[in-house]
Length: 167
View (cartoon, rainbow, N blue to C red):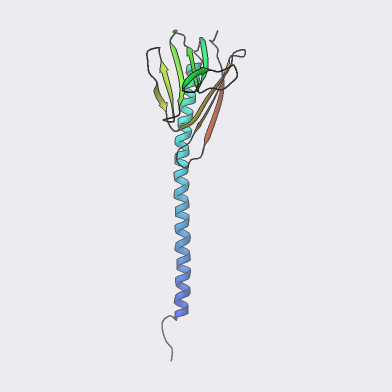
């Protein structure tokens, strides 16, 4: 007599194959989702870094004098020696206004101040580090900026610019 249906062994094998397929699909979905989140955060960080570098570089090209690079030491800003790196840069622009850019470690932001009586305002967030160095003889400023958001990993960008109007 022929019996119709599945044996217990066939059912277990079918369930095992089905479970393996579902697990593989779920794993692929989770990896794709994680990759999308990482790349999305990476794009956000890169955009913030590009905007910051572009704005700082554009403004610095108008520096006419009194350019100082500073670093916070024991809670106070100290001007660094030529060629050394600092986290703040200040200068006089073409209209003789004081302009300063700095890295705010507490809020992880790049901040700008325009004019002696102004306060610092953020222009970019998700910043991990910002460093300036100035070669007065060559009139070249080097800007290094690093950013990070969530699982993006650290992204670093660097630019060097020649100060045409600096005297």
